[in-house]
Length: 116
Image 1: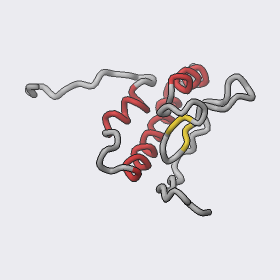
Image 2: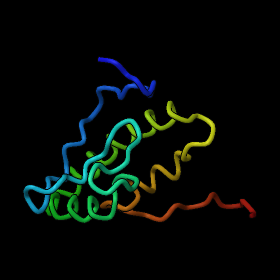
Image 3: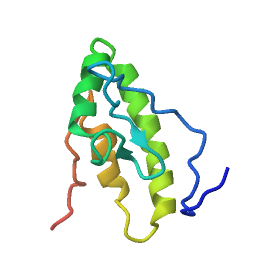
């Protein structure tokens, strides 16, 4: 397969197959790798619609959602760093984007004794 844009190829990590398209027949809010933009609306994935649909789809299974999001966070960190190692999003920004909004959300605690 040719890669005319010379983008790094995505790894074979967890496959983003959720959330399912809603309403049926419309484009699913899934990421386009390696850029991790939403296939349906073009915003950074998970977009607001994907987050809402994921919460509904994994209702009653918060651990499964946390595991799914954590795997995709790992893959996105790898892909986005390879795309732009100098000006890309920080790991903290990606964590908030992928995992921080999901179940078991806790605020980031700054180490004690550190002054700003």
